[in-house]
Each structure stands twice: as structure tokens, then as C-alpha cells.
Amino acid sequence: MADTSSLVGAPSGPAGWPAADPAIDALFAEVIGTPEGRRDPYTRYKALREAAPVYASGMGLVICTRYEECQFVLRDPRFGKAEGTRADIAQARFGHLEIFPRIEALLSDRRSLLFMNPPDHTRLRSLVSKAFTPRTVERLRPEIVALVDGLLDQVNPGEVTDVMSALAFPLPANVISHMIGVPEEDWPRFRNVVSQATALLEPIVPDDELEAALLAQLELEEYFQALVAERRARPQDDLLSQLIAVQEGSDRLNEGELISIVILLFGAGFETTTNLIGNGLYALLTHPDELSQLRSDLGSGDRSAVIRAAIEELLRWDSPVQFDGRQPFEDVDIGGVTVAEGHEVVTVLGAANRDPEHFTNPEQLDLRRNEGPPMSFASGIHFCLGAALARTEGQVVFERLLDRFSSIELADDSPEWKNRITLRGLAALPVVFSE
Ligand code: HEM
View (cartoon, helix red, strand yellow):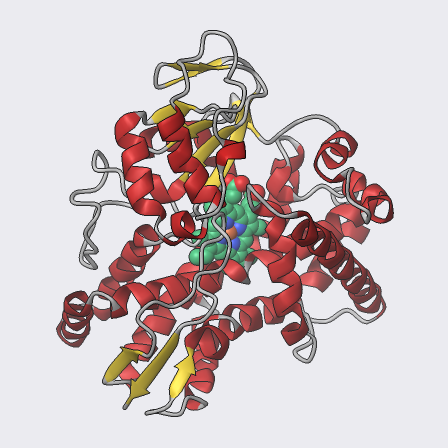
């Protein structure tokens, strides 16, 4: 097991906080810092929630593991994204890296929608939200079905297929690339680049991965600067050209905001939905009774309602995004713990999804469950902009998979998880399909 001692017993939180408990700190440290903890975060979340649902950790973070407090923190306007100048934040996190001088100006200049507060967040989000409403996305469904069928046509039944490479990655990458207008020949090269860049969202990242993440960020930046220039000269029927038109027609979007929102949309569609497909299929294959129940429900009931409920449950069961967080703009009480202005609060979405006060028998996969949405897309003003798109992609994938293949077997009982926790997913998922 990796050494997590440096994460435990760090100086305690502010005066007046409940005393941190090294045993509870160790549980959280295992989740964020060890392969074992990342492989099975749920037993640790349970122990953490039972010990202290709002826990003022020795690491100086407040950790929320119940649905109610996670929702409160994500929705209450007294919480938001870290304020302070981007330059300060960049310096504190990356200042020690060799690459820092090359990327410093970019880091302090670029502000992603994901890290903004109102009113800038409201202004920017309103410029892109129309492209992602459930109604707009529903119109894409036939295209998504055709894409999934095209990918499944390439599967060789009876042979081992890595679902991550054959389906889970290419589908969402293809869909978001088409929407934005990234030429098809370019998107495969971004699989690694986007994956490297998302390391920035992880709580613990070794320096070499941080360097790679910043280099990946630079590569995305340069690529999209060139693509924006190209679309400015020759607009097309895509989201990028629409955003350029907004930028030229008003002062509501500057060049830096344009580039960073396009990079966010592009990147957000990659690892997340990929992991919904991978984690979801793995959950089905390790719960054969649920899988056969789903097959029979699809054969006899309202297919659309059946598959929608199943996708909500797969999102709840093993959320592709496990961690989110906010800081309070003033002192706020969360479940009896007073959190000082500016303190970091972690909302553990994967733990909220297993909260027994919100979901009946949460440690049981139940594809017929109907207990409201999981916390997987967060809540409040940063609620996932791509939720309707991700849900539709998930519904189409699982429906088509079960329609086309009479059996799907795991070719490896313990597939390898990526060394990530904020974005939780499998490195590979080898299976054998039979028609
Ligand atoms: C199953 C797949 C997905 C999951 C689990 C997921 C999850 C999330 C979560 C938890 C947040 C909130 C972050 C926060 O509170 O700071 C978020 C935000 C966001 N997501 Fe997703 N996401 C998924 C797919 C997508 C897709 C396909 C897109 C493509 C457009 C997308 C675009 C975004 C954007 C732009 C934001 C930022 C919204 C804002 O800050 O206002 N997501 N997502």
C-alpha cells in the first residue's frame, strides 16, 4: 500500500473545529492517495459518513459525504469557486514546476466557466446552454444511434474487445467533436491529451503528471487558437462558428473566454461519458441478475422509461465524477460544523449517491430504482451542462448493446482502474460479445 502518512495528521483545521481523527483521515487519504482506496472508495465513504458526515479533516478540508449537505453546499449562493487572482492560484499550485514560466501568462489569463462565479458565470453559461438543452440534444439522438451502430459493426463477436477503446472513448469524442466542429481526423490524437489535461482536477498529482497536464493544456490552447482562426475565415454549421458569431456581434464573450469555453466543452465530453459507459457496463456484467432483469424489462415494458431509469442507476452506482467542491464566501454552518470563509469544502458525489438517508439500500444496484436523480452531475448553478447529452449517449449505448448482443462476458474479472479518483474510470474493459 502506498504511503499516505504525509496526508494524515497535518495541522488541524481552524480554531473551534472538532478535533480531526487520524483514523478517519487515513480512510480519506486511502481514497485519494492509494490504488486500493481508488479501486474501492465506497466502503471507505461508508465508514467516513458513519463516523462524521461533515468531517473537518486534519488536512484542512471539510469533507461532506451525505446527499443533503452536498446539495446544500453546491446550491447555496454563499458558496462558490475559489476567488483570488488566477495568478496567485497558479503560482501556489504550479510555481515549483519547470514548465511554469512557459504557461504562467496563460494560467493567469484563462478562466474556465467551471471555475467562475456569477455574474461572469451566468453570462458565459447563457451563451452556450441552448446547444445542450434536453430538447436540442434529443434531436441528436438518431445521429448518436447511427454512431453507436457504426462502432458496434466493427466489433468481432467471439473475440476479446476492449470496450473502452472500441466504444466508450470514440462515441462521446465523436459526438462532441461533431457538435463543436473539430475535424474528424484530429480527434483521436486528443484522447491522451485530454486525459492528461484532466489530471489537473485530481486532488493528488505527482509533479511529472502535473507537467504533462500543463503541456496538454498548452497543446489544446494552440490547437483551438488555430481552429478559431480557421472558422473565423470560413464559418461552418457548428457550435464554434456560432460562438465566434456571438463574439463578433457583441461584447459578451472575449477571445480568451471563447477559447477556454470551447476547450472545456471539448474536454468535458471525453472522460466523463467514457466512464459512464465503462463503469456502467462493468456494473452490469458484475450483476448478472440485474442485467437479465434489464433485458427482460426492455423486452416487455416501456423501453424508453426502462432504459432511462437504468442509466440513472448506473450513474448513481459508480459516478464518473466522484469529487466536487466549493469555498464559502463567508462563515457558514454545514451540518453543525462552522466553516470559515475561503475554506475548502469537498462534496463527495460518489458518497452522496450511496447515502442511506436518500436512497433505499444504496449498496444494492437496482436498475428499476426510481428515487430521483443521483448527485453525479452535481447541483446548483454549475450543474453539468452536458447532462442531457451524456444521458442520451448512455441510453443509446446500453439499449443498442443489449439489442445486438445476446451475451456479453467479462474477459478479465478484475479490470484495471485508472490512477484517478475525481474522474473515476477503467483503463481497459476487455469483454467478449456474442450475437
Ligand atoms: C456522465 C457524464 C458526465 C458527468 C458525470 C459530468 C459531471 C459533471 C459535474 C459533476 C459537473 C459540475 C462541476 C462543478 O460543480 O464544478 C459538470 C460540469 C460541466 N459539465 Fe459535465 N459531466 C458529464 C458529461 C458532460 C458532457 C458530455 C459535457 C459536454 C458538453 C459536459 C460539460 C460540462 C460543462 C461545460 C460543465 C461546467 C458547467 C458550469 O460550470 O456551469 N459534461 N459535469
